[in-house]
Each structure stands twice: as C-alpha cells, then as structure tokens.
Length: 261
Image (tube, rainbow, N blue to C red):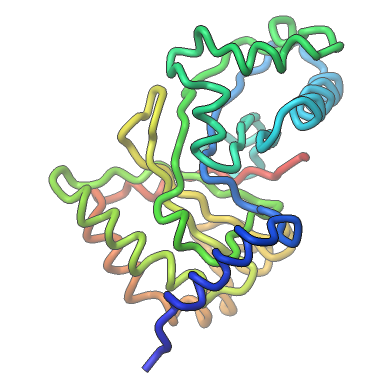
C-alpha cells in the first residue's frame, strides 16, 4: 500500500510558507498563451532579441511575472512562435490584471512606464492569435512541478457533461501518476480562465531537455521509442482512463515547442 501523500504535501507547503527564500518556483499557476504570426519580412534574430529584452524588463520591474518565447519544431504549428506569460500565482495575475479586458489595470501600467526599449511589436508581428489565460488544474497538490526545454501542447476536448469528473480525475489520478513515473517528463492539464478558450482545456507535456524528448520520441510523438513504451506501461491504465473523458482524436494534433529563453 502506498503511503498517504497528504502529510508530505502539508510539510512541504509549511516549509515554503516559513522559508520562501529556500525554494524556487519552476512551474507557475497561471500561463497565458499567445500564438504569434510574424510578418514575412521580420528578421527572426531581431525578433528574438527584442523579446528577450522585453522579457528581462518584465522580470526586473514586476514580481512573480515572467515570460517564455518558444518556437515549434514539430507538429501542427511547426516553425511558428508562441509567447507565454507566466504568473507564479493566480493572485499575482489578478493583482496586475484585475480587469479581464486588459483595460484600466494601473499596477501593470506602472510597470510598463519603466520600460526603456522601443515597442517593436507592430513591425515584427503580423498578429497575435488565440490569447487565453490558463490555470493549472490541481496546482496546489503538485509536488515539485517543473518546466523544461520542450513543451508539447495540444487541445483535448472533454465530452460534454464530464467536465467535473474529468477535473477530479486529473487532480486525484493523472497528476500523481505522472509525478511518480516517466523520469524527466511531466504532464499538466490546464483550464482556460480568460480569453478565447475560456472554459476549455489545454494539455502540456513537458520534457526537461530536448535530449530527453529525443530519447522518448526520436522522430515524432506518433513513433515512441522502446524505452518510452516500457516506462509508459506504469501509467497506461491511467492514460486509458483519460481517453474515456475526451472526444476521440482530440489529443492527436499537437505542437512541440522548444523554449528559446
């Protein structure tokens, strides 16, 4: 029989509260996804350098807010970019953006006033699509959640009427299974809180390194390695149960992003 994890979670939570400087948070509670379409004439190096400076300024002038620029190397959006806003906690997101429509957020406006870089978004980007703020399901019960070099994204569709049971399954069965299995690999289910996909779900399959993804999936996610198949056997019953909540085929279309910074 497996030991009850609740005392361990309570102990870790107490340490984080009492000694926050001893811990670094590697997985935020809120992720705001923005898919980017570059103008054809945009120089990608200039674009990447601009977003690096912009992201650094965000970290310098705010607390608990960061951002990742990612470029897809496999899947539906291969070769395209996404930018992810990361808020360590939902309370942080709500502090800087109390208004969901993006208007009249004085705390965030005060951050932007400290910027000294030229706003180059318009010349570089043709459009920003599919903006959504997502909350990580079961965030408070995750033990040492991690973000890695590869983030594989897809958009599962839950069968209508099964949403509540699905979220309970994610928190109580899916999350613990992945925390105990598949070294260097993490699976998170997030739910849209604001934006175009509010109320809908996204899955993030994270690999700690590009090499780890290559070992598990040498060419694509449809052709796993023998090592992955062997290790996956531990959680295959949970993954089979996951499918019972989803519309068929909605986990097939995916995009693997490499985190640039």
